[in-house]
Length: 91
Image (cartoon, rainbow, N blue to C red):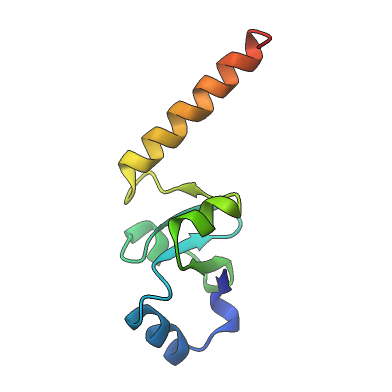
């Protein structure tokens, strides 16, 4: 995980070019998504972090963006709903 505020713009562009950064995230909202997502581009620099893989984001407790990663978000949401229903039923 790379914090935007700890990386120069030049370093960041190089990492993106070499694909060592492939996803961006909002550290306050714990959401990750594609680098070209309109929602992600609007966040404050101090909240922006980057991941090399989707698994890295998930392992750090982030959920998929509902805008740019709609299918992954729906899958995450369905799993969360199933988990919640199971606990509500005492399972």
